[in-house]
Image (cartoon, rainbow, N blue to C red; front, side, top):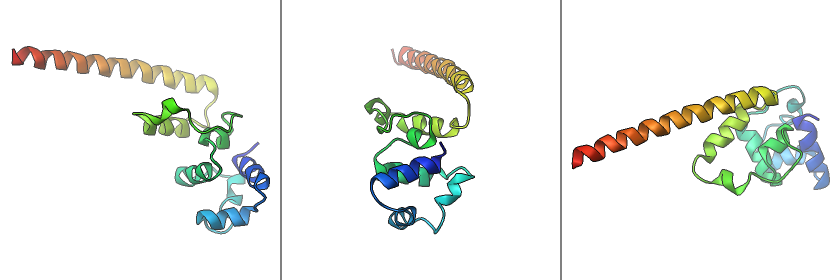
Length: 126
């Protein structure tokens, strides 16, 4: 199922046409129909997700759960989570997991460096 198919299904449930949805969201004529063959811009994708109160992941077909992003994802760093999800949408799960593991390793490295720097600064103040 394409992103367009998901949007069409959501619009049908609310008994509005794609043309009406485009008008409500301020999109150009036939812009949603183009999603059948091309990837949507992230800002437009987010507008549609917000309109239907579903997650971007749902629209992209990465999950069958239409619920918006979990509360955990609304805290600090949520913009990075959204960025990661959007930019890895076309990857298969193994590729996404590999990138995720690398990011975790790099984050651990950065946190350790920050702790060491903080410890050095604290030591200098004494």
